[in-house]
Amino acid sequence: DRRAELLDAEYFHVVFTLPEQIAAIALQNRRIVYNLLFRATAETLQTIAADPKHLGADIGFIAVLHTWGQNLLHHPHLHCIVPGGGISPDEKRWLSCRPGFFLPVRVLSRLFRRLFIEGLQRAFQAGELGFFSSLRSLKDPKTFTDYLAAVCNIEWNVYAKPPFGGPEQVLAYLGGYTHRVAISNHRLINAEDQQVTFRWKDYRDEGQQKIMTLKADEFIRRFLLHVLPPGMQRIRHFGFFGNRVKKHKLALCRTFLQSKPAPERLTQAVDYRDRFEALTGKSLRDCPSCETGKMKTIATWLRPPRRKYFNSS
Image 1 (cartoon, one colour):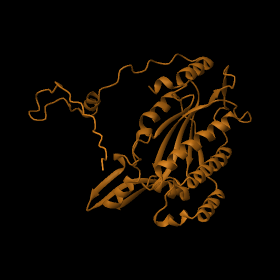
Image 2 (cartoon, rainbow, N blue to C red):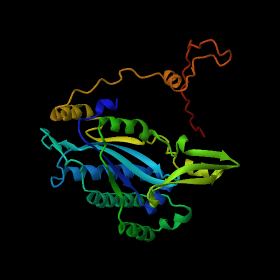
Image 3 (cartoon, rainbow, N blue to C red):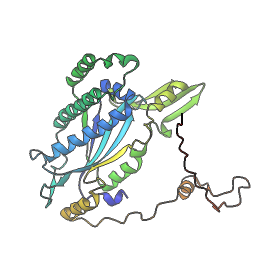
Image 4 (cartoon, rainbow, N blue to C red):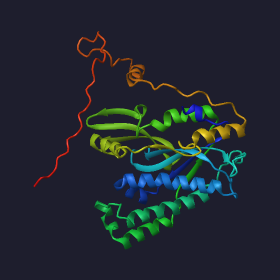
């Protein structure tokens, strides 16, 4: 399905990162702050891209939320995969960015900071934020305002990575990197004596590969920092990738780019039992008792509706 959405254009990889001071608030208000991170990032990219001084086009992109750093500490940031151009305001042509350059990161950073801070202030005024432990003092409006004022005086990190090599590389990224959890198995070295040892890359030390050993409970604590609130979508689509306009606008993009029609999507959903068997080699249809017979559904019981009780007192 993602392959069917790829365009014949240069793709860019832009990362929006929250500073440590805001990450501390995010840890205690995950749903509010993570949703705000998506909104501020989307508005930033779409506003700057629509400005005729930069691109002057309606763009589309996929945003992926990550909340971890290599050491498993809390480090919320958003990866955005963006085609290098967009649809003109009159929807009559494709406007390309300069080769190898999408949008100025300094301009993106300043607008992102302002939009995010304004959104956080609105959430505070609406009483939607909670503060506990070391952040308890932020319940006071003046203390909260002073805290945000200090954050406004630092540069927020918006990083544009080198462009993807082509559609295949974009697809490889979407297929693997987007669905990672906080740490993958290949980084784990050892787990014994109530300790866990793993490899990590220290970006503050020129990306040096290092070894870290944590007590088991601390390792588990760090891993669980990255469990998202129930129902939260970690991958979201914006602009001409948005579900409501995607079919029409992607067809426009292909026409303007004079590219081939999109490949057919998967027309039939894969049964979870078939997917499990393809991944593990084990069948969920095998009888768990004899391990030779095959189980089949002969009846299905629907859950009865919940009864409503009324207080008659």
